[in-house]
Image 1 (cartoon, rainbow, N blue to C red):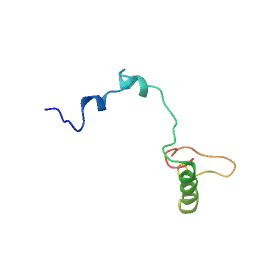
Image 2: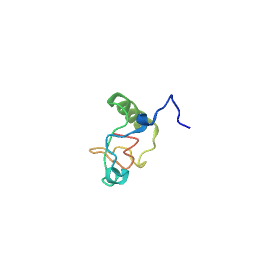
Image 3: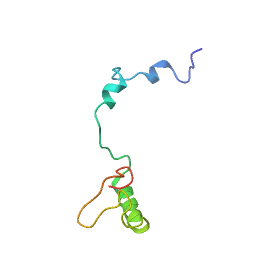
Image 4: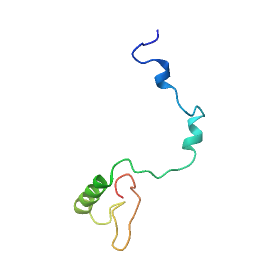
Length: 70
């Protein structure tokens, strides 16, 4: 039974091609804004032990945990 509050057209996509075509190519995206990235980076620098995966090194950045640090 169709739901009048959520008609089928609400779930139509502009691009009906297979999702695997979109996700087949790796993408690097930020899901949070720059201020949040800065706040999390400062937090991780303070609270993660030295040498933790993804913790920035002096003179460069590690991106092992790209979802955690920028």
